[in-house]
Image (cartoon, rainbow, N blue to C red; front, side, top):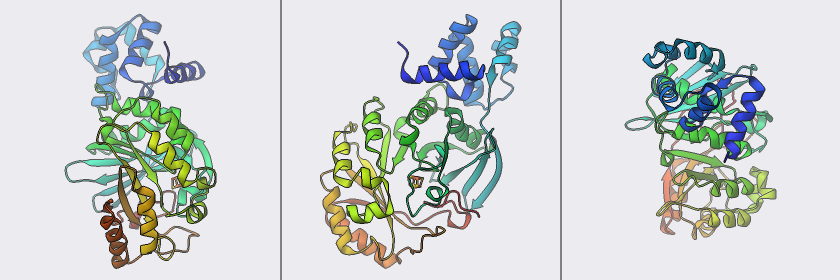
Length: 358
Ligand code: SF4
């Protein structure tokens, strides 16, 4: 039976009269090859290998196609490979921000973050965002449109094969709210996860949400065990959170907590909570105690991130001592805390800065 995602792919094929290769898992590609050309796994695997493993845009050079020239010609007229064009890169030490120009002229930003032995790619899921978080430049842009599946996987294609980076982890923490573009994001994750393709394990993919409850419930029902869920919390109570993140007015903290309690985590799995520390707003020891009370029953690793400069948001990040004091209160309460000192500020690639002019 066809899943939601297969139907989505088939609809797009009918619309565009072309197969955007970056939208397909190997199974889906094999199925299309059978339906449309009477071919199967042999050729689908070859195409998948050339594109997703080698980034070979001249995929018809592969043996499997040179020995089937008629089929290769048919395919040539059907297949599209359009990851978007990387038009600008910005560097801060080993961190790279890149801008992709999409086919309709819109631009999105992605960030390659250096880790010890590999790189993490932070991808965008929308052009702009509806959520309007005050500390976020993308939120200030407003919403333009959802990204298509290939525009999401295209960021990984370009990071690996255009910029030649060794990407092993993906975080959906770029422009947009991924759960607000759930079908396309889930299909993109399936393509990124395809073992005979990009081959990124689900446990190395993190989807970060501002807390869309319906999206969390739907994601929980999709049997994507291992996929990591991050939640942008940023406040110890509803009053501060609703001011900072308008989504909290419809999805307040207790409802969010109930949705998380129902979310199927893998054995010994946990949520990642992100807390942007803002001087004088959410960084007092009392705030830390309230936050610990909220978190305590949930399995959570908490990332503390000092806020970055954002146009129109007249707050500062706390000093190191205040950040340490806040972390110590939480640690004393048994919360696992990681302090993240901001990377990428000088190229506007830090948390909340995508969309800001460098
Ligand atoms: S923080 Fe995320 S959800 Fe909030 S406005 Fe920015 S991109 Fe959207």
